[in-house]
Length: 208
Ligand SMILES: [Ca+2]
Image 1 (cartoon, rainbow, N blue to C red):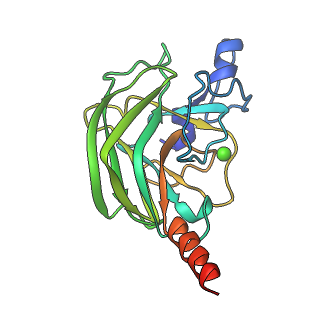
Image 2: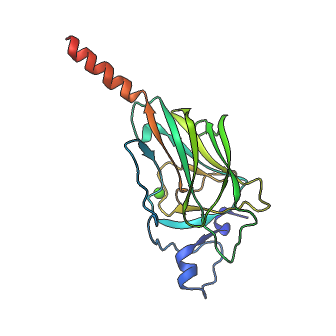
């Protein structure tokens, strides 16, 4: 089954239940983050635009490839304090389990290579769940935040995506890039390399 056949447009379904969708339905964006999150001064990385359009349960693994330089040019790595996952439960497509593995891997666009962490989380409908890392994970400048659904028989729990595809896809559903938008997988932490350069530059200025 193609990926679009397993994705549903939330608003259309909720507002126009008589619509018979085939492979794809026009996207009608709805609300942004329903739960504002208090964030500290750490760097918060997200590719999604905060406006939900899709939910998806295709694939055993679904992940977002983060390139820290998209957010902080010159960064050589990222110290991850927590990752964040947004799921969506629809009564017509119920989850067979709420449990999933939250995984972090080093790796670039070619795919995850070295696993840094795995934790079992319990998904909540339309609210964030977090994997906390103490001590923080030392990730390279390219890494993946992933949902592993192997506890489910059908790729559940389903996760959210926005409806604004980036020029370079960053969301992957295991068999290919999700080209309709960006998954709501995010992370927070500190960029590595950038601060050091600032300190070094400060010292140089002081000396000369
Ligand atoms: Ca987007």
